[in-house]
Length: 143
Image (cartoon, rainbow, N blue to C red; front, side):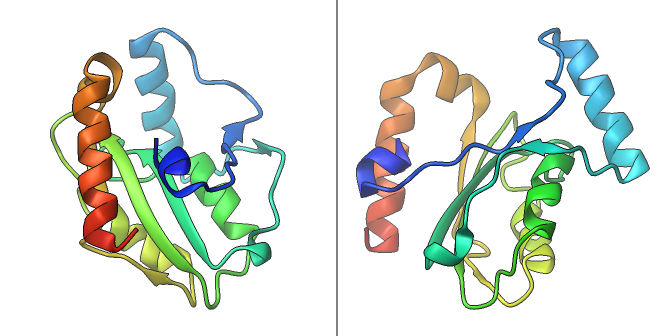
């Protein structure tokens, strides 16, 4: 929705080994990665040096960014970039993940406190509400 609204290019951070479709198996694996500090390999890459503003989206997993997102972040030089985080969650909002992004993306200006947090169930079951949130949020940011 964001990419469509601002006519942005898209790149999806995809782990080489997919997360299980089963919810409990998925969260168990994600917790294991979190506690071990894992950096799962990711498929593909994009030249972030070609971009000034980067919308960075991810799910909030226990107040943390998925480990494969850190794998992607650590591949790049973020100096001079503006990063605008957006997330899905199930009740914790940003949960400080925007601050974690700011720490990880050294040299970037991260829109801490200005990211968009949409409940995952809203994004999945009430697209109209999610789109309205995205439009209002983008307008508040000047897009």
